[in-house]
Amino acid sequence: MAPDVPAAFGAGRGKPLVFQFWFRAKGSFLGDPIVDSSPARSESVSESDVTGMASFRQARLELEDGTVFDGQAFGANRSVSGEVVFATGMVGYPESLTDPSYRGQLMALTYPLVGNYGVPAKPEGDPLCHGFESSRIQAQALVIQSLSSDYSHWNATRSLDQWLIEEGVPGITGIDVRALTRILRNAGTLKGRLLIEGSVDREEVLNAPYQDPGQRNVVAEVSCDQPILHRCGVEGALRVILVDCGAKTSITRSLLKRGADVLQVPWDHDFVAEEGDAVLLSNGPGDPKMARQTIDHVRIALNGDRPLMGICLGNQLLALAAGFDTYKLDFGHRSQNQPCVEVGTSRCWVTSQNHGYAVDGRRIPAGWAEWFTNANDGSNEGIRHLEKPFFSVQFHPEANPGPHDAAELFDRLLEVAR
Image (tube, rainbow, N blue to C red; front, side, top):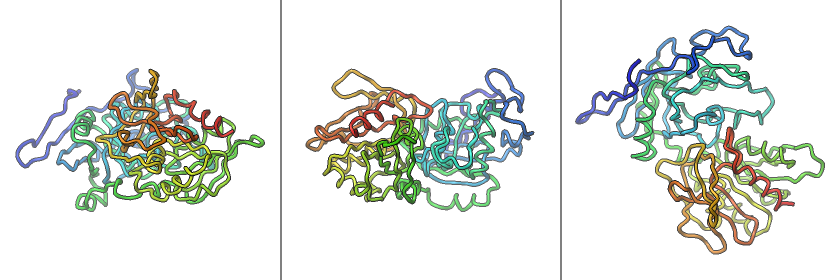
């Protein structure tokens, strides 16, 4: 086994820094399970189906600062470009990959072993299927250190590699994600390109400018295109209008579980004119200032008294409508253990987060106050109106797979809506 320290090649005047990291896990830390050991896997699966490594296609991750990481390709045989970000969660790759907030981004997972529990089944005709946050993979690509050659889980029906192939999403394994993360932490978020040997679009991606999701309205790409009514089955239930800016399905499931109907509307829909007991501004990708129509509708809604809550991007949209400003974080918050302190108390919430922009809490409009701040960097994590039922948080109370410390915020929304 090669040492888990990256070897640098080509470092010098006029040459990019190239990292080559060849460690790849076989089996699990508990041994090498039999490929067909999962009860959910009755069909025979070839090694290439499970690992995606049989052909040993070469892949290269290039950053805009000139740094290069060499590894092996898995998933779809295509090259892509986008914003390179890192996430530190140990579990939950099916949920993270399908989170619309990752639209246009090459997602690097810092946990070294990925794919060991496979991918769960997704029943046809169930748009709110548990284990996924949207109907498809939203991330541009997946960047990992070690792709597990086997998987085992009672609910698994396919490998991570096979799922990426089906969804047309490429991946790279065999690189030192710690070295990559240190670069992103020091330099801030960087754009990059994943080049797959033998892909038909390799030269096109290589010679084209880096794609920057922050320069386009990615919210419009992930929002629904017409209103959708989700019923909880309770007579006379409250109705929450969910403004879909890239809403995770866990938000809808959380509200339905609490006995509320959910009217999911497009990001630019005039939700002010809709009948409902409360409004929830969802999470979503990109720069909040790109969603001008949503901000204009929120500004009108603030003239009334209907309860309004924001989550993640929704926090930023509410803030912009109220008169706050927003800015881009150096490398964002993408993890399952961000500590958030409720202002005026000693209570700290452990939260799940996925965002690259934040609200500027230094200039607070009249009638508003900061609600939460981040215990790590002091950035804003939520705002609230001092008199009206308007409030929002930068973190995810619907967090899936967790933590669930903030789930009570959905109860608060429904309480003020009654």
